[in-house]
Image (cartoon, rainbow, N blue to C red; front, side, top):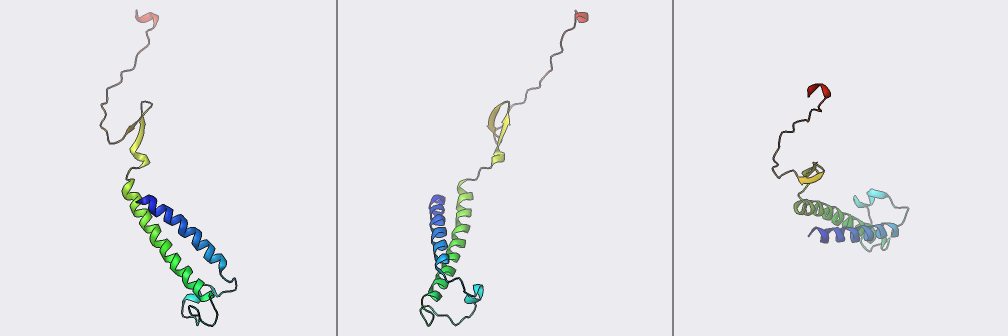
Length: 113
C-alpha cells in the first residue's frame, strides 16, 4: 500500500512542478487565491485555471504525503534501534538473551607456581 502512495507522490511532484513552471511569472502570488477577480476561464484566460489546478494539486500532494507517512509507518514498524550489535552478531533487541558471567583470566606469573 505504501508503495502505491510513494509512486503517486512522485507523479504528483512531477505534475505539480510542470504546472508551476507553466504559470505566468508576474502573478500576485498567494493573493491570487484570496478573492481575486480571476475566474476559471474568464477574462484572463487559462491562467486562472492554472492557479486553481496548482492549488488542487498542492492539496492532493499534502494529503498524499500524510497518507504515505501513515501507511509507511504502519507497514514498517521496526526501528534501527531494534537491532543492536552483541558479540559481533546483530540480534534483535526484542529477543531475550542469556547473560553468562565473564570471569577474566588471571595470567600466571612465575612466582605463583
